Image 1 (cartoon, helix red, strand yellow):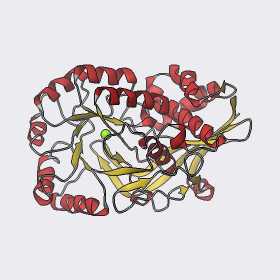
Image 2 (tube, protein in one colour):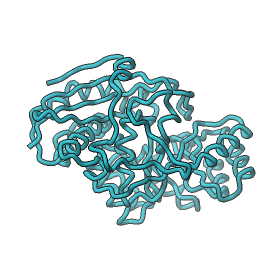
Image 3 (cartoon, helix red, strand yellow):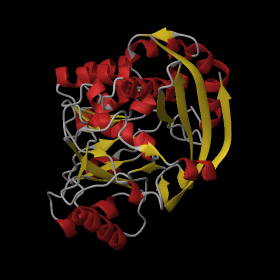
Length: 373
Ligand code: MG
């Protein structure tokens, strides 16, 4: 029986190497919540709550997640005993879908603690057998076609197995066409609009349909799944949903409606590993393409994504860039590295997430902290 007796929360301010631009705005410092839980035997578990500062991506924010963790979820976990970490999600889930990132933070910390306590890797704990996982990269919104071509060319030369470009109205066709013309029809490209297009003007999306993209991710603003089903029926390019699939019920509806044919699965956004494992089972059963997305996580969040990505159900490279892509120095050791074939090694021979937090650095970037016990 595992009983958590201490929960440490820290808000970190991590300066990004280069600003990241999406249709919602620009980020140059990643504020994030790091969690460390400790059980009564002294085992620890680490995880990251991936909520962002602003509510542009989903309504849950870093501020709301912090509040929920501190005032509600921590109390549910402290003192509650469990035999297996899959029992943790039911303890937390009625905090609601609007708090899924906060729930995921504690739930994933519980899996990491269980892996360390059993001296197993987190990947092993998750039933994930791969030794290496393929990496893709997400590039922010581009405003210069020639520069975009250079950036994509550079990513492919580094070995990335898929390049996703963020788009928004006015920064779409010209950019993607330039990349296609320069790099050929088969370069593994996709686009992500973060909901920037209106259902009343899908002409840019229909034009992008001729560009042999692997997928178009989350193109529509405030759209119901029925609207996505209508759009998918008019496009050859598979649609991919990210923000619109927050729960297993959403995924079941997406599949039933044929609203999209690919899922961008982010364990830190959907409530953690238990929900993610159920989603992966559905994707495999219904032939839905699936890959692991990123939330500009530090090395701790990345560790969890790498471990899950070692599951066989994943069909496409995840957004699993190495540490050096985002950070001057990552908060874990060893840092995450990618080989020349665009693969990240899964640390199966080390307990838990396979890397150790760099406490000196973490102390320097901590802007507030709280211990609950
Ligand atoms: Mg996305």
